[in-house]
Amino acid sequence: MTLRWSVGLPDTAGWAEIAGHVEAARERLWALSTADIVAVLDALGQRLRTDPRLHAVDGLAYLCLWLRRTSLEELLALNLGDPGMLDGFRPVSRTQRVAAQPRGIASHWLAGNVATLGLFSLAQSWLARNGNVAKVPEGSLPFLVHTLDILNGITLSVDGRAVHGRDLAAATALVSFPSSDDAANRAMSLLADVKVVWGGKQAVEAILALPQKETCETVVFGPKYSLSVYDRAAATAKDLPDILRRTVADVLAFDQMGCSAPHTLFMERGTRPVRAVGEMLADAFRQAAARRPRVGIAPAAAIDIIAARARYALAPDKDILAPVENDWTILIDGAVRLEEPVFHRTLFLKEVESIEQVVPLVTRKVQTIGIDIRDGERRDRFCRAVTYRGAARCVAPGLMNNFDAPWDGLYFLDRLVRWVSIKEGRP
Image 1: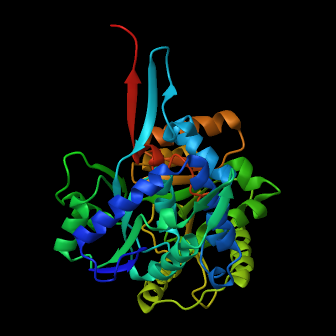
Image 2 (image 1 turned 45 degrees about the horizontal axis):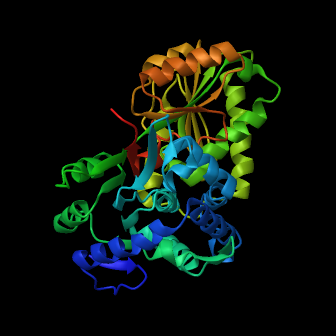
């Protein structure tokens, strides 16, 4: 195990030393007010946005918007009801006052598909005043190390007091070790008061099987599937090209490696042939790819794309739209099913008689559904039906990858705190 970043700890620190340091440092974090932490994170977002070294980081623009003061205040209100719950006891009845306290140390197992993911996890844990130990994939380390360096250098004046970003940074350790290192995973699990797990099926199962404290809370963001649905009115609307451009933006974000990116688009049969819709979609891909061209592609990914294209090109009941290069791919048919993801800007376009045919396909494995259903009552019925079956979010095209609350069916920040109370009065 290698410690990659933490204020005041050597790279050779062991688990006991890391836990002791983070536990001590979180007392300074706990002493900050909610307004202090929000101000520091708002400043962090501003500095990330203007850092020329980070302009190529996928998803950075949205992350910086998410770190704005107004966004964080809204997040706190959604999760806790009253953001002041983290600053002291608040009355909830004539005789009872309630407060939110940090759980202690949060251990984060971060997935490697999205470099900015770790900051969404850490920022909410900082707001909850938890100390943090994060296992970071190698590909995400440069971004997070640089981010914590920036955070460590932030000093603000809040109500005449000096507030330091280093109080957040010092309570955070980034660690790196192979996923197969059972001893390291076990140690990281045992020091946690809350475990936060982002990853695929095997990773989640392995981490859930680890020993942990009896009082430990576990929050899991496992593998998910997302899709899009357009009704007949959307399929025939004049603004369909614009809506398709928004769906393409959802596809291009992180090259579909995020769990909220669509892989299948169901289009209710309208007056336009599905091939014509596909051509509009292809035009949207061309425009987007010109602005955000592919920068290399792994051989294994290229093989997956070529194999999927070949299946559709050879089948008489299927169609395909794609450039010679592997920049993007549209695979067209009428089979009412969720296709296995190919990723890398590959979208399955399916024409259906009714969007209600999609409802039985939805399970708890579905996270986000991008919807353009023009009739309000029908939209509400559809969303109620698919969320009953397991979908977590129904959002407009273009917003699928926006990290909001609730996420995966839960209020994350709420799970990072303990609720405590004072009951007064006579029995």
